[in-house]
Image 1 (cartoon, helix red, strand yellow):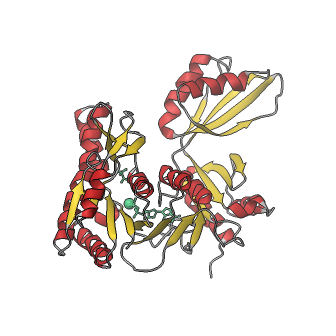
Image 2 (image 1 turned 120 degrees about the vertical axis):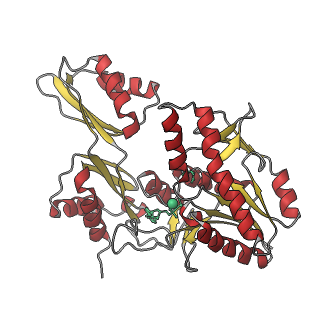
Image 3 (image 1 turned 180 degrees about the vertical axis):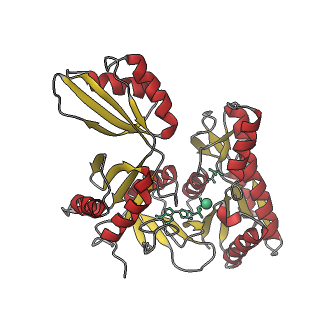
Length: 402
Ligand code: ADP
Ligand code: ASP
Ligand code: MG
């Protein structure tokens, strides 16, 4: 008998038919004699709808109340799914985050899991119940409901798999696994049978929405093997683990991230300490800077450009304006940009990946504004209007069709 954690995302439980479909997979697993713990997201766009409802009341809802509101989405779907499983003759019980023992920090909206008290979960499994846990929520030391941030249900699943020493941790999706590119957007995207934690972490961080990056980070830390598979087709999916046997593959995937803005500080003094001043001020405000480019100095001045997430762009500009580094020259903030990346551990040992990517962009007549690299990824910043064409061109260079 195995203990299996299954996570179902919002698309997989969007309506009654979807819930019934998912309930059948759960019931089939249970009937094989395994213990089943299920983590469920809010149905469809419920979380977005709830945020919109809050915004109808106030532009800046209190974070504590927002967490109470958003957690309701997952609470609802867990109860509905429990009903759907029970309707198939399987005993099931839904648990909210606090009932499942999720104790978190009190950072409302981005709470971190501190511990999971697994007693109740074990009692319910002992009673032969399918346990359906509402994703992305817990309780903090003030006995308040907290949520983990967007996409946080994936983290609930990995944390449960680690805490319960589960034999498998499965993510059921509306796609058949992790692909070399978003299969809904790019023709010729190929399913990967395996991928390493580090590569998956890069893909997730750089825009592949298939798994949440915090969840992948946690899976790596606790060595939880993940399986991504379809909730509609019973085909093999993708395994995410430490080492894979697909060494020959140079690049594992191509991603697009439009949640980025480029800020350029033009004409700052070409003297030591300027970069330090800028980036320490931003860091003090918890603003995460991504790609950084500094020009060669000329006439005692230089230009510094960097990217931040869209949400931070306005605040970053405000901080820099207050520093008055450009002798009155205006700052440039461009939100019409996108970051395109290629990811793959193989590129560390194989030269030529960057040139192949740049050649593909050149071939599509797309101008590169910024470049950044690490051992396992290359990212470029381009104009957002060109992003989909860029992804298609770069993907086709590494994974030619037919
Ligand atoms: P969730 O569990 O969050 O509901 P979904 O079922 O919506 O997850 O599946 C994730 C979505 O991620 C897919 O619909 C797909 O369009 C998108 N996606 C983006 N990049 C990739 C990728 N590289 N591989 C697979 N899916 C991807
Ligand atoms: N419902 C939350 C969201 O949409 C959490 C999740 O689905 O993982 O972000
Ligand atoms: Mg989804």
